[in-house]
Image (tube, rainbow, N blue to C red; front, top):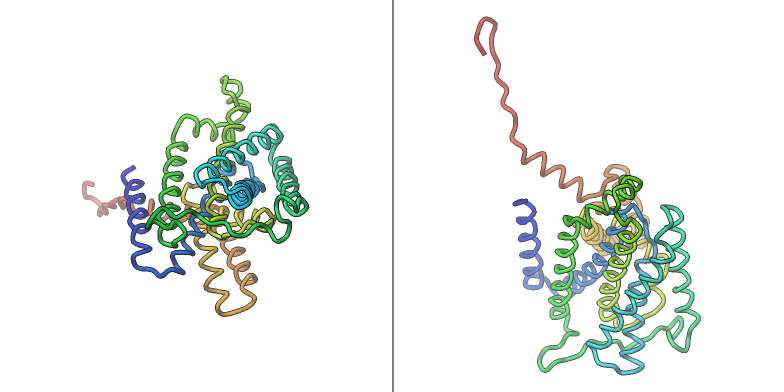
Length: 324
């Protein structure tokens, strides 16, 4: 337990120091990483605790983003009201999606979330009068309160960091709560949990709605970070990117999604400077990582440090005729 608190303190110190020692580009990339880390966390909440692989978490982020763009840009509603309505609508969407998918299993759940996500993506293209179609809705800006400009990269970083850390800490407590243990029990042996009287369907539904709400928060920051909302974030490519990041980092661990997102963004940034075929290089790296570290980077690092921290057993050698 002490090691976990030490890791939390180290992460907080690193996040606080990042804008002090890095330029605006590095800070903006950190903003992007934390936004997608929230989306990947919403995926891993389902995959790591229930064994559900969802392809509609970016859909919830897109619903949140479109709500902000439509209400904020087209109707001119104030910032706090727009964000509140976006999160409420995203949560309502998660409730509806959850009612449709909560009783499905594994491949069926994957295909249902894929179908629902593609329906929303198609709607964002075709409902041109509301969503702007392919061109989307531009001009999404955060407010300015006196000398505090929330559009400034470093101010935006402070806001994103605060919310991201708070959500990760809340999920950390959730994983250790009776509810989190119930989710693990459902994944391991659903029939036994039912026999013990636990509300399995309700627990699954609640986890799905929570994951959708987290993805909605990611969508709020995403649309303000891009300044425009288009159908692209709702596409299958973004959903697979989030899934890949979570699997690469280790979707069973809390920090795995954030690690996976950071590694992918760093690879994209570095490799694209040297070759136009950067996606091929990234694909090879991902292939090797999954083959050599199937449980993800976070769990491999955890096993390494756990092994290093264990005291070595002392071996006493004796010669014949001596008392040990």
